[in-house]
Length: 105
Image 1: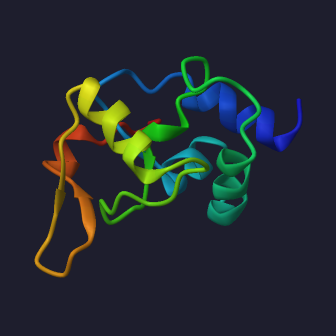
Image 2: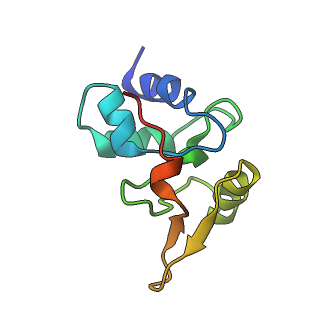
């Protein structure tokens, strides 16, 4: 199984209502290739119902990127009970990030 496929398999373990980070996925794969994880998420060839890339955010709780429109990522997260808000600098963030964070420990 190649690196991207290993990332997708790990991401499938993140339950609805939780988010994880590029860093957490890399740590779950016993590496520090955070950017490579981000690249894998960007190239996800699967339906997000199968590999939920919308659940991956930045390590500081920022919403992060998404291969499609950010509004779609926000909508999917909200439908799973994950709230997104705009901070005082206009940055989209996950509300209650530490409580919503899924770790692969």
